[in-house]
Image (tube, protein in one colour):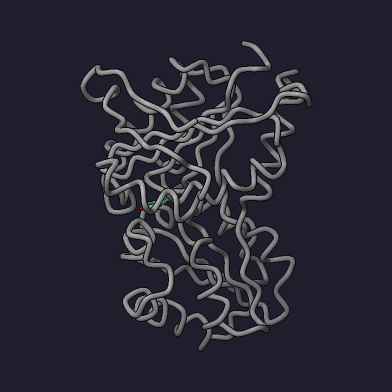
Amino acid sequence: MDASHPVGVFDSGVGGLSVLREIRRQLPSEHLLYVADSAFAPYGNKPQEFIEARSMAIVEFLLRRNAKAIVVACNTATGAAVATIRARHLLPVVAMEPAIKPAAALTRSGVVGVLATQRTLASHNFVKLFERYGNGVEILAQACPGLVEQVETGDLAGPGTRRLLERYLSPLLAKGADTLVLGCTHYPFLRPLIQEMAGPDVAVIDSSEAVARQLWRRLEAHDLLAAPEQKGTERFWTSADPASAAPILRQLWPLCHEVRRLTEIDAGEAAFLCP
Ligand code: DGL
């Protein structure tokens, strides 16, 4: 393993770019590989075995491209697959955890709302967090079907997205939630709308900063931090049709010049890049 090698990051789609953004901010020297499994998004309504199989295949793909560490930039894949990834691979693996701990410390009303996919809310990891920080704080779990799809199509503030958010936020706000946890990596792209709809007195938090910090710590512990003089680059793969994926990738990551189809893990063909 070499410190100049890249870090592999993946998500069910473009949501993990919210984590990639924070990794880029905190670790400017790292080369980053990003896989958006958009042809199979959303993961949130798929069986655990399916998400695990996709995640394992993507990790293998990233390892073939010399990834020195893996970031599972997807709460749903974390719940479904991180234990298996860690059991099979020795390299540093950093994964998502909904920001319930900081939310429990932050709330003044004692009511925290958690927005996530159905599968994340049903996962063992989430149940453990719920039990751990639910003492003295009311934690309201809100599944948000449809929101990932809105982000995948680049609809970050249109009427359809607004209607869905209205439906999901209203019960939480009516019960006095003053802190909202974005427990899916797609949702930070909806933060401006969520904040506008929830109002200025409600804190909206996610865990991308903490995950990037944790990546820094794990790389440092393994002596794998890239040399400061290295200029970090990004390369992007998508399992969706690149022609339809490119506009949304560029909307969320303006420096992405080119997107090619991820075919290798499915069909054994060579994949592509985005320098
Ligand atoms: N970004 C993924 C997450 O954090 C979305 C999951 C999905 O595709 O349903 O959970």
